[in-house]
Image (cartoon, rainbow, N blue to C red; front, side, top):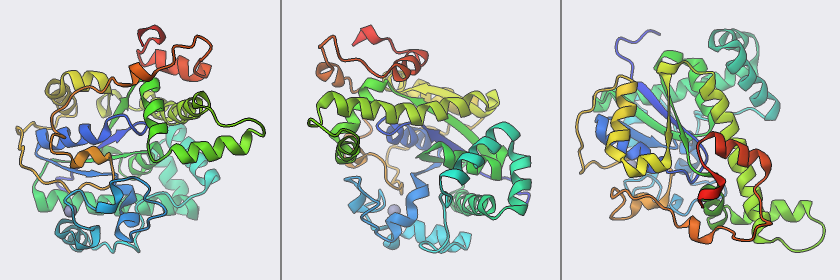
Length: 330
Ligand SMILES: [Zn+2]
């Protein structure tokens, strides 16, 4: 099992609409590594499972523009890794109970104990098999490209914990956070809006779904993602984690990217602007011509509510403050 020079896996965790697509791209450019986007979803893209792929960029398949099944990069990687897309799994197979117990075990008992449980309990074993399949792909990518790291922007903390339990020494965690208000407004503008509308309609018997209802629901989705991400960050050793705010990254992209790489002891090889990426999913902005021109998107401030009665749920407000955002700076 021991590899002479296994790839470091830099995992970007956070809520959606927080700039992870930009960040993974810059990390790969600066390190000479490879960014794989939301690799946990590669089977959905390979099988063209449109019900699961709701993102507007999904129809294009791989970021190179080819459908994943026709992409030469992913075909080569799969062949090298001995992986069959559509059959082997790369994401969690467990239901709520399995995922919750796995998370608690990984966070409170640690990787070794959780691996021991997996030896005797099938559902945990399945989670680790998905993680090992991911590592088969990461290793193949590192060998084929000669890069020092693979950047995975799967965002979801459960995916990170699966990977960390399987191979703790390979993992570097980046906690990416963006102002809850910006994320909430962005979430309800996009493809997820209908999901929030249905969710609120089910719970609210009378009256229509208002804009503040939607923002509150999206803000709670941010809270659920970020409270798990922060908790995992707090319980991760210092040298294996780094925090970054979207706003600081956009203001000083090169400086912040270098800070993260230096922290994880990954050499910065210099920027290769012409690089073609084969990332999965992520923001549709990846396809725009000026994608690599980074500027902070603060347009949410103009749309934010000036009605004094609108308040974020208190736990969202609290976590947002702990992340360094102030309610009165909108
Ligand atoms: Zn491709």
